[in-house]
Image: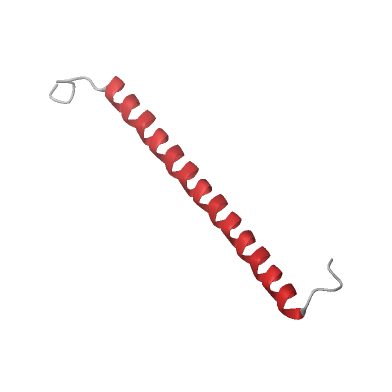
Length: 62
C-alpha cells in the first residue's frame, strides 16, 4: 500500500499486524473458554438443584 516504504518499514508493519491478529485470537479464545466454563457451571448447578428437589429424607431407609 506504500510504494515508497522501505523493506524495514514494511517488515515492521507486517509484524505489528501479525501481533494484533494473534492478540485478537487470544482474546477470542479466552472468551470462548470462559463461556464454556460458565455453561458447565450452570449445568452443574441445575443438576444439583434437581437432585435436591428430588431428595426425600428417610426414603432410602424404608
